[in-house]
Image 1: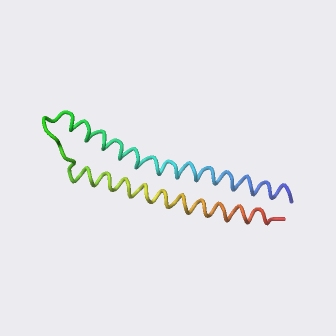
Image 2 (image 1 turned 60 degrees about the horizontal axis):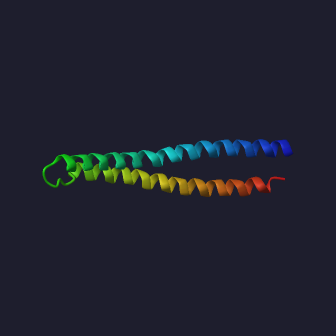
Image 3 (image 1 turned 90 degrees about the vertical axis):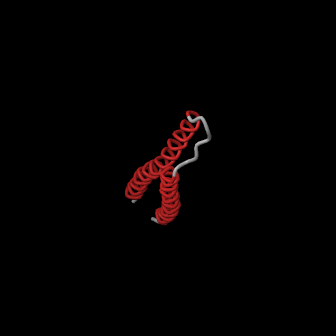
Length: 94
């Protein structure tokens, strides 16, 4: 029984590690988009003779990236809850 329990634990750990990597990627991507767009805006401002304001497209890109980040954070929250529940079930296995 100990082998079976250990196999279940290792399988859950492997799945959890893969899911964490996926979720981290999902969070980093929108952050990269936001940082890139802000760098573009900064360069535009430096090259202009006057203050330049962000365009509607700039705002849309940033809003979409932040919405994706929000979804990723919510997914992390759900995954952490699932992992906690799984850990509790595994601990109950005799």
